[in-house]
Length: 315
Image (cartoon, rainbow, N blue to C red):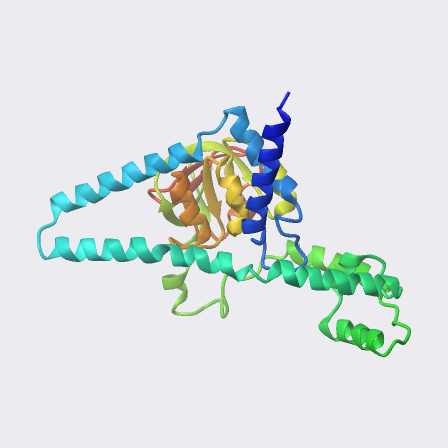
């Protein structure tokens, strides 16, 4: 049994963590709760650490640091002046400024908790006025409708009934999720080949191979787990390959359990790539179609060196 003092200390440290980092967003959508509101989603990562089935992130970081230093020394042995001077200068510049790319995404979510509290209060007032049936239904209203309801509240007049509009919009949203949007518009442009690295999968010897951009080296063969949002986080098991459209800072705890990461979009400086390198796991970005081509449970081989994902078998 856990000692009460240890339990109190753990709860205090967890609360400090949530106060500092709980504002990060799973998706840039006010309708989705923040980790501070739903801390249970990070408990799977904590349980995985306690089980001993995954390596300590501190050990992974140490290994990645050693690997980086070895790579630096290997380059320095092969280049002479003035290239050596330029290399060291650019290396310091990259190490000092690289974190800004990740910080920008983290900072973008700073206003989300405040906005959600504001919308929640409006939602409560709309429910009290019988305009909608649930507080969360406010996110299914259009801007003009919210303004109309706010005006009614301000003028202290009965609120118009809008609850009957919500079910159809939720159904339409589910239909939209099944659509496959183009990666960029216009679809056919001279810049497409330069900006889009991924290619449609091709079959080789009975297996499907997806091509993208390798952004963290290494080769791993493991079961795939396709995640589309926070509601799927519980599906990821230690040692699975995390497959998603993209990720945000709030997805970071999942990387501790993942054997590799594959995304539809992204590049060397995307969140998925940065965190994959920190955890020293292979990553392939910009496959365009991984979430559509790969099924949860399939064995896949992720080659972060070549930028390929090989689908070995059907689930």
